[in-house]
Structures are given as C-alpha cells and as structure tokens.
Image 1 (cartoon, rainbow, N blue to C red):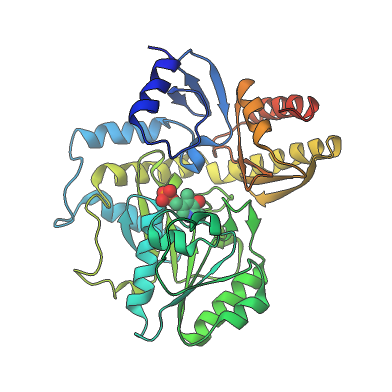
Image 2 (spheres, rainbow, N blue to C red):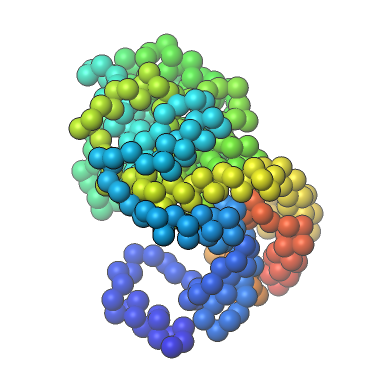
Length: 395
Ligand SMILES: *Cc1c(COP(=O)(O)O)cnc(C)c1O
C-alpha cells in the first residue's frame, strides 16, 4: 500500500467534507510526523492544538496502556476513580468549579449553553457571542459561531443568538438586556485569526453579566491546557468566568471535552437534564490526568512561555525581512502571522519542505507548536518558513 492507495479509499468511501493535505500520516512522536513514504514532517500545528504536549507523549501513552488493561469504559451510572481525579485536578487549576465531561469542544459548549438556559430564569434565553468566533459544528455551536460561512445552507438556526464585534465594548452594552442568559467568547479567538480579548472587554462582559444576572462563558477549547503559557487563557486577565469549556489538548490526543461551572451554577444540571454516553470514560480521563502530570513534571507552562517568546522574536525578524508579513499576534504558543495576502500556498510549500503550519481566515498563518517544542525545532521551522517566503509569491 502507498499514499495513492489510501487516497483512493478516501475518494470512494469517506465523505469529502475536509480539505485534506495529500499525505497519509502513519506515526507521530513529539513534534515529528512520518508519512507512508517515511518522509519526516516537523509539526508546528499538532492536531489543530490537540497534541498540546506533542504526539504520543510517553506519559500519556503509558497511562492509556495501563488504563486499557483495567477498564476502558463504564457508563455514568457508576462512579470511576479517573473521572473524579481529573475533575479535581482541573478544578484546582482553574476557579474551583465542577466538571461535566463529554468528548469534544462542540459538546462542551453545548453543555455550557444548556446550563446557562437551565440555570437562569425562563425569560432569559439570549446568548451574546462575538463575530469571527468559532465554537464548534453542532447546530447550537455553529449558531454561536459568529461567522455566516458556517451558517450557510443550514438554516433555520436555533433562536436566541446575538452577535457583537469582538472587543467592541459599546456593542456589548447595546446588545445587553434582561433576556440575556449568557455571553460566550474565546479569550483569544483561534480559528477567527488569533485575536486577543482586551482586559477591558472581558471586564465589561463580567460586569454586565453580574448586573443582569447572566453567565460569563469562556470557550477555552483552544486556549486551555497551557497553550498560552498559563493553564487557561482567562488567567492572563483579572476576571473569573462562571463557566469554561475545554477539549482539544485536554486528552493529549484522546477525545475528551469538559465544561466547568461554578458549583452554585453547576447544581442546576440535575439528573436527567444533560448527559453523554462516552463522557468522562476511564480511558479519556486517565489520558487527561497524564497530560496535567506531564505539564507539571516537565515544567511545560514555563517552556510554553519561553518558547513562545523565542518564536515571536524569530517571527518578528522575518517580518523585518518580508513585507508580506503585516504583524504578529498572540500569547504563548498561540501565534498568528497576519499576512497582506492569502497564505494557502505558503502552507503547501512549507509542507513540501517538511514543515506543517496552518492558515486561517485566508491571510493568517497559525504557528501553534506543542508545549514540548525546543529551540532547535523552532529554528528549523523558521528556516523553512524563511526559505518559502524568500521564494516569493507562487501559485
Ligand atoms: C476546535 C474548537 C471548538 C470545537 O471543538 P471540536 O472538538 O471540534 O468540537 C470549539 N471552540 C474552539 C475555540 C475551538 O478552537
């Protein structure tokens, strides 16, 4: 079998809902991937931020192996050790909330939206979300995502969502009324192109929510689990949200999502109101525990900060060299390179030279290496990007 054989399988048997790069990946180790022809790829966008501590982290692999031999899944009719422990670990690293576990970011956001409606009085039903936001692909979460391109073809959408421009404080004030039950935003918009919330913006959301009895929900699916150099993106600010949602890097490569809510709010989710069959299964929770342990034992928050600064410095140097780079945005290892033109061909040409990065919103290159990334790996990535940019515009 070779790459072409597998591509043929996809052509015939897999729904073509993804724009895929023409490579079949067979192995991943830390920040390196291998394709079927044994070519090496340096991965600076591992799993769309899922492999936050690199591919197949030995501690995660070990924990999964061990757990797989004991108990993979038991339904939530029972208690498990791992779910309880992971919830405690997350709670202690955030604001002391309680967790509901599911299997993805969209589901975590669904849980948060449902809880906000459930917890607040009946007349409160509206959600305020931001333009250019991304919250997932289920009906409620595409509706929460303030981008028409995710709505097109799927109308009618669930009712009750209002959009405001991100970081626009006046628009927030204008949109708020007694019918609002929650505001959902990302502390740094990811898919929307790496836009950071201003401190005043998050503070205004907090104040307006308090004033009107609405809930502040932060989508930390991409910013969470250390990517920005702190456990959660909101920890760079003075505000404390009522709920956060997580997924992506939480399981180190195993599917898991979680919604955390302040205990007084969480208590509204009584038996029968919400559930997930696979949510919080032992395997996924064992992986989550191992991820947190690895981040702490290996000082990866610290590494994310240091390597984030280093990468940024290197990217700023490229900016001096190439006018196509307008500016660099982001925090920690969540970095965006705003280009003055579309970046799709840069991504493909980097891949041909063995470097994986991403382009979002057409003109923003996303550079989001794992928290285990080394200086040497960043240097190699920058060298390739430098080469590609040096070749200039190409089709
Ligand atoms: C990826 C992402 C989601 C959706 O997560 P899925 O696991 O794909 O459902 C939601 N919010 C943000 C901020 C994301 O980056």
